[in-house]
Structure formats: structure tokens, C-alpha cells
Image 1 (cartoon, rainbow, N blue to C red):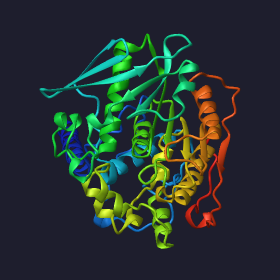
Image 2: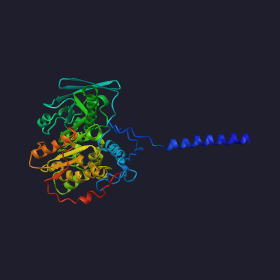
Image 3: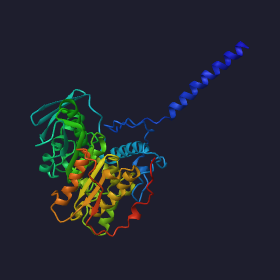
Image 4: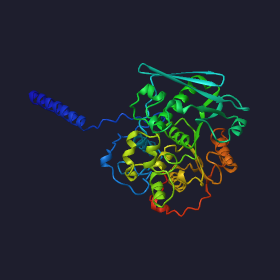
Length: 418
């Protein structure tokens, strides 16, 4: 009897080893892609990234509420994992990989200069951000980080007690033209052959700037009250920075165009109608904002498993205000409008519609904020950086006369996530 019991125990032990080995063989190793600067620490299922050759064409805008496993989102907490999924896809296919926080980040504040020193695997680089201090208010001040500078009525911001920080994005990753790939302080640290395009490299730099604020400037600048902005190409950078760092409370891309607030698919439609719109096939030739392999999609934007409305959605439930220029056809004016409609459904599903705003007004120069939009920017700044909760931010308007079949692009029902 004892021998039989011993035999059974040995059999179960061997069976457990065999079973564990089988499980190990079936586990897919996570790709070395991070969803950086996410304090939620959401625990999500593994991300299986489809190869380009296996991607299928999607002729509508991809459904924000349908994950890659084909399941509809039910709870608000599901959105944390869905936007991680979008972040994985965007890094893999369009942006390049944003490295996690390096081994060492140090900073020092002297006057209006915040110096950030970064060390990683025996290499060191640094940059200095210039700060314009407010004319009123109290320390620690809320602050707007301007990618290459800010064009959203800086004098008014300063008068309300908002600091403005100029982030030197061209030092971090150059964007002169298509020959700029692999040039800048980011690539000095991670190598010229790193997958990152300029946009994700800037986002990494903004995250290091926020690290620097938290380390040595938190008595002067409130790291819980940070916004980010930028116009045109730098507006694309502002969006990516806001999407990939959850510490940023307010994101204001200004006239960001293709690779920013537009959708690749709708821009292709505008081009097919004979309009002068920047599309994916053109932008990958113009500059190095995206990873080099993104050019695979030059003639097949429909194969992208995401579109820019989902990059906008990565900001949710935090605050996002899009300021656009209807007169700039090259920036995809109709495409931006459809993108905003699609993105808004995410804030609706999360029941935070006052955190999303869209303002599209023509008749002014590029990156010149008209008076009406300055009022709207001011409302978002007051609500989300100055905590004036009574201020209304229910803003969604365009002066464009678009004959758009919205249902052709947005074919999903917006859920009420629990």
C-alpha cells in the first residue's frame, strides 16, 4: 500500500513537471516595449503584436472600445489596458519605442534655467529648459511645457500665475529634414539606430523634464499641475508627450495636422477628392517624426490597427483641447474634424466630456491663436491647472462646412462604461 502511494506521488510530481514545461512553451514573451510613466500600474494581459504582413485592412476608423482580442470594453478600468494596447501598437508601427526612465536622472534649478542630467549604461547627456516665471500667484506654480515654445497667449498665462517652460526638442531629436534621423541627444544616449522617431524621442525628453521638476523644482513648480502644448510639427510632439506620460494633466496640440490630430484614413479620402492634404505617404518622406519602418504603410494606411483618434484617446480621462485652423487644408481640416468626433466618444464613454475640447476656426495665420480660441484655452487652463471647477469647458465647434458622412467612419456604439 505504501509502495502504491509512493508511486502515485512520483507520478503526480512528474506530471506537474511535464505540465509546467508545456505551459512555459506556450507563453508568449512580452515584446520589449514599455508604456512609460503610467502611475496607475495597470496589470493587463500580454500584448500580441501582429506582424505587418498579417495585418488586415480596416476601412473605417478602428473602434476604441474593441480590444485586440475582439472583446468590447465594459468597465472604465478596461480603458487603462486598452490604451496600453494602443500605445504598444503605436510604438511598434509608427512612433518607435519610448525607453523607460534611465538609470539616473538628476537636475538643478538656477534662476530661470532647469538643467536635467541623464545617465544610462555609461553614457551621459543633458539639456536645459528655460522657464518664464509668472507675474502673480504663489509657488509652486502650475506650468505649461511648450515643445519648442508656446503659442497660446503666453502673456495671459503668466498673468494668471502659470509658468511657461520651453522644452528644447530640437536638441533631443533633430527634425530638419529626412536626413535628421538618429541625430540628437536622445540618440547620443541610445544609439543612432534606435527605432524612435523624433516625436517619441521628444516625449521621452518631456518625461525626463518632469522627472527633473519632481527632483529639484517641485517647490517652485507644481508637478501635479502640468500642461503641454506646441504648434504644427511641435503640436504633434505635444500630443505624443501627453499621450505617453500620465503625469501631464492638460494637453493642447495646436494645428498639429497629419500625425497629430488628423486621421490617416480620412486624410486619404480628402486627397482622393483632389484636396491638398498631407497624407502618410508624404509625411514619411518629409521628415523623421516617425520610425523609419512606418513607410511600410505609405500605400496601405488602412492596414494600421489604430488611427490618430486613438492616440488622442490615450490622453483620456485627462484633459485634451484641440485648437485647429479650418483654413489650413494641408493640415487635414475635415480629417481633424472627424478625428475629434471619433475621439470624443472615448471621453463620453468615461463620462468626462468636460475634459475634451475641440475648436476649429479659420481666417488667421498658422500658429496664430485668434481671440475666441484664446478664451477657450484660458477656460481649460483655469479648470485643469488652476482648479477653477466652475469654469465651463464644454467646447466643440467648427466654422467649417464639411459634407462628411460621419457614419461611414464612426460605425460603433458609444458604451457607458461602468
